[in-house]
Image 1 (cartoon, rainbow, N blue to C red):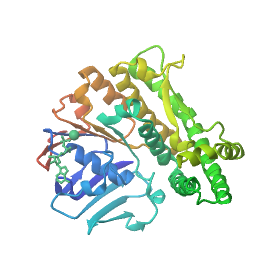
Image 2: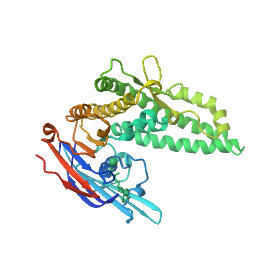
Image 3: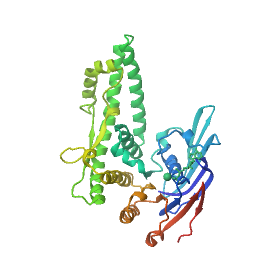
Image 4: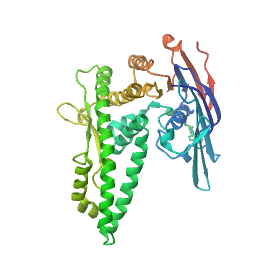
Length: 369
Ligand SMILES: Nc1ncnc2c1ncn2[C@@H]1O[C@H](COP(=O)(O)OP(=O)(O)O)[C@@H](O)[C@H]1O
Ligand SMILES: [Mg+2]
């Protein structure tokens, strides 16, 4: 998949921007605060319908306006034009999405068709941060591979929400235990399906993660990912009896205490010691980069597609050797769009690349090739 053209209207500090990318390597350079990350953010919005900055769409709209629009033209793909428009008027958010001029109503019909993988400085939080960040990350990868998974997650969320309302009512002696049984059954079926998908995904993903960690770190041993579940089984009947048994705890808390929404992915070494308890900062960075390399690879293997790779400013942390080896590793994996503060001068790499300079929201093409 190649992003050939990007258009932005009232997106962050760009009132009107059009960029034509190189199918191979692109470098976007400019001072801090000039708008480099905003360009990658726009591409991630077109790809995932949400920003990798994990904020609401109304923050993305240019401060003086009440809507934004972005579109991407793509080659080497079944579909060629992706559009996202968002408006926020009278406190009402409204998003309109299109593929090849047809309006799409369901996120799962849009997702997974224009696939990007982003390498961003906050990736380290997937390693260091809360379980929620890891669940969100792995759910997003699984969704890219299997868009129907988004519908399952949404359904599961709805079931938990309704079940929690009933639990609270029972706690206040206003609830119906028979009704709880119905929701327990629905909960068990959906939880089972999500658990099975996550488990089989993590087995495949781990193989790539271990391989990439060894390659990037040069160490002799690699840590690996463990999917830690709060439910004992992934079989729907066993889950149902577990949930029935746990109902008293759930009622007391007014909340669904166990389930895929409470699970975690923990990286350990072969002695089961948690990676975050022994790894250096550099090892953690290596692990987070390995996750992303593995994401690129699993998309290639399972979808038979090369994704678009977005690399935001992580170069400043790497020395020249690591920088070059990262470009080497990535350059045959798909089109790449890098952002960085300083210009990049390696003649061999620049021969197939395009360079852009950003200055206060104005982007000009470089004079490469
Ligand atoms: N909603 C918005 N409207 C207009 N400008 C914005 C908006 N959000 C952020 N900006 C501007 O975008 C700039 C930051 O862009 P960013 O892409 O993060 O910079 P960098 O080049 O350092 O990656 C800041 O100057 C900020 O003022
Ligand atoms: Mg930036």
